Image 1 (cartoon, rainbow over the protein chains, first blue to last red):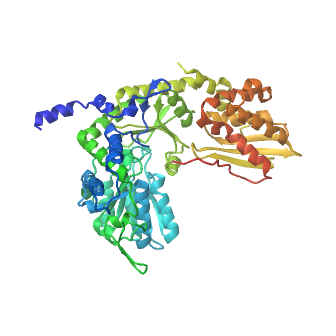
Image 2 (tube, rainbow over the protein chains, first blue to last red):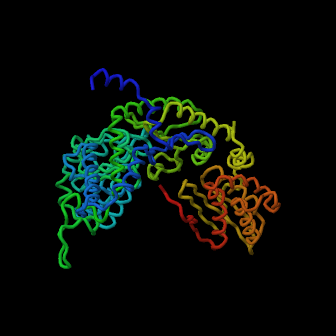
Length: 417
Length: 158
């Protein structure tokens, strides 16, 4: 494509065209067009992804890595191609470093149980941040109980930004693992993970990055980041539920024991001794989620077709517009005002509980999240029991943000504020 | 324009009790207390009861929550003060039936002011908000002085 053509495409982000790819967005809720603003919880799926599932079960279904017949070879090929696509999506060095799991949560649990239980002992420390989702807290607490290691928490400021100096100070000779989120699911804060990883790697501490919220919004380059582990979920990047990715550096995956035992993860089995398969298969016991992995590959193709840089730029525009518009609403306070943010806005209204906001917006056809967002320690940090959260994807529009604003005015009207 | 079902849910009386909850304090002479918690939205309340020979002599609550749960707790304390524990349980049963849409409030004069919560039946996910205080009351009446948690089943914290 010529340069001027590229520029033309850049100029117009054809959101209305993209919206047509997502059948669910045509729905009406209580007679009003759906405004879906809970993308941080899960994203909607383009028709191509839905079709891929139907195509797989109608024409490709067979178990993989075993059959010598046509269908099995085809399914294996389609499945393994997604490993290659995933490698490209996060710019890994090798497809061997891509382990398919059922979600980001399982990826973290795999590292905690396989790497953590092997290499951590009593007195060691695991460093996380205040911004973490429960899925990047609880697996480490479980590991601490099992090994006697201690959990340390790096603090944030009132804007919701990590205090990098404090983080750096907390990395000591006892620190044996750092686990941090790339983007906060509640505040939208984009962590300075490259610098965080550099600080940890300087002291030979491996780093796991929870990329569940980053994968739909930003380019990921695990080699440039130099992280040791990176996890994310398919369902947040327009793919099906039940698929997640664990990226791990080869040399680490090689020395880690299997997470689960079963078929496909072995080379040979006798009743006396089992030899494990090579990576990544060593970590993929049992028949995997073949159909959903293949459809996840289609979601990655779909994103590549639009271009992640264009998605990021468009979403930053939405974030700016939403921040400006919502800030004008009397009594509305945005929680999380980091300089570097993804398109996620948490807010509270004076004397109105987020759950009531959620119910009233729902009757206006607007889907937002109200609650603690699986980040109860973060709620405590900001002294609120819950927040309302609007999270945007590239298929959202300024008109939808206007609908949200109108909806919040209805909330104020109901409460006589 | 406020949709009519929202008007039915957030009635003036409910908004008033949310803003100015009655019996919203610690009861110094309480001999029964219980804690209620809704992990779904983080609603939390502590109920204080002074029960003498099966009669609820005094009742109060503290806590934070959505308008429905707070107003429900407030109106519950107002409606059962002076009643016997047996009478309170019977009111809870009627109240619960009304929220499940099984019994029209109009047909049940026993509920009195509590019938303003009939609109909740149109919002199934909010029934738990309206019943949190009542479940806590039940737990409080059944124990003697102990603090219990009434975490309801089938609620995922995510």
